[in-house]
Image (cartoon, rainbow, N blue to C red; front, side, top):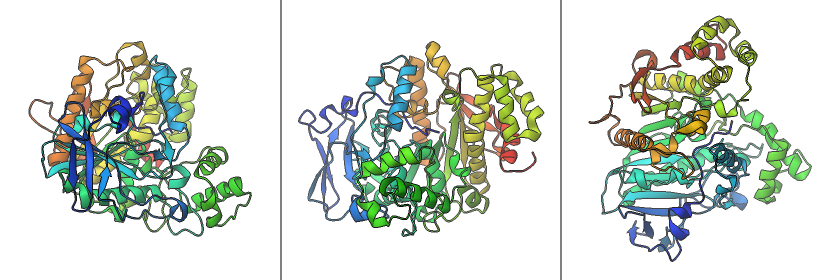
Length: 521
């Protein structure tokens, strides 16, 4: 699964001309008493961006595969006027973006890869101009299968959201084999997750300088970013660092049963690929160039699933077990999925026999009941899309919402159904990541975007920022979004007809979830 979190266009220099060059005046600055941060005004002048702020020491050399260390010895002045390199990764996400652009009729070379580096722990802040303070804070965690992605993909630019009266922060984390790696000489495995915790601690300690309220932090993320939220919500090191969460198109955190032993074996395979010795010491692997490690992992571990594992330190038990045991942070939640998350990964020539094979592999005791539910879905491709989307996204998301509600907190469920106009838009459906440009108010030129699309985006931004402000997404002028009740059967359908509905796939999950857990439904 790709786990993307956005739609890439040319480069973020389209938004910040020159990305810190002489073309962009340094108009605003703030000081924390030790360092003066100079930022840039975004187009329109109502938001200031502080880009490329370090929150940890570069994780290189002896700090490779070590928990992040807080940045020390900051200079008296830091030019926060440009994005810094993305964390080291292969071309997985760039290829995905190019396929997506091609799917909408654009030339693939519209997608340009950023610079990649092991020295990548720099975050970005967008804050309303004019000296406001104690504003709600929204911290974005990008997706990308935990092996790719970066904080400043064009649909992650936070200026439009910040203009709604919030402070937006986008955070990076180590990826792939550099972020999720186990070795007998290491006591922890989840370096990417620990980077996220370190960034949230930086927000707690520093965001007031940029106008934010450290006691009112909402984390939000999509796909692997949403899965990270599942771990953060159940991981002791993250307790108290946020009070709300917006979980977009995730779910694998609650289906993941990978263990540290699995990752130890992956580490041995990597060591053999890099050094010829399965038992190579950690010091030898730390001396290898990061590009060699990424390349070796791509060739020797092509199907590796990168995610936090139980290591007895940052993650004490699987996320689902933590939910079952009540080990959940005190948070309110917005959570949802898109209508056609899995469609783009399926063979267009999917047959009914493929649907039956899937059911027999995943829920054989419920074949007749599942086929009854799917009877109103005509094409086999659409049926298999509904099943895969439910299994991987909808069912674990509804389970998370149920556990949040059972803990006495509010949960609001959405179902994003908007499709881009035209034949290509219909063929893509409400694909994985489709909601992101609506939330951020960013729509690539090659995406067919109507006035209706922009209005839906403005409505989503209002829902998201109101939730970050108060814990309730509702407000005057927008359709009522009811909080989840028993069974979490109601969702806000977001699209051309935004309204509260019975979740269209809740019945599937009532059958699939027990079957996927090995119970007879």
